[in-house]
Image 1 (cartoon, helix red, strand yellow):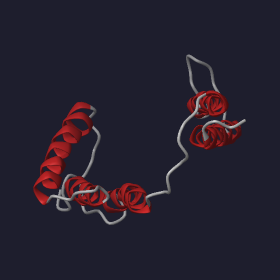
Image 2 (cartoon, rainbow, N blue to C red):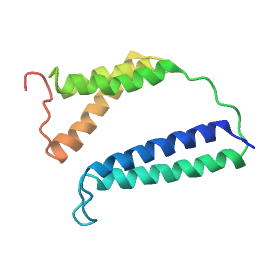
Image 3 (tube, rainbow, N blue to C red):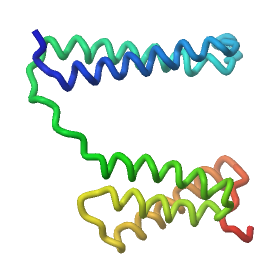
Length: 149
């Protein structure tokens, strides 16, 4: 008897995604734990995801819960779309890292329940500083910070 449809469906989703990536990684060389190949990380992560999905799936039969709510499409589409927009603005459109972060943070903020310009811009500035410190300064990655740089 199904006690939690949310857990049941989430478990099936995690199992499907994990198995898909674990099997897809078989097209690449695995390597060893010391010299990992391109398939090593997706294989391990895929099987861990599938295992987590199995635990959640079993939980759907044991732990009672409320029925799933309808999907709220606006935040789902805006937040995922912001990641796509960021990728397009940074590389193909070459607007620069700073501009891409500002635009993607504003798009993500529009996906929330309340949108406030001051909070979105503050968040964008903090994210720019943290990302610059970790990726450009810390790791030395050659990002174009501005279109003219």
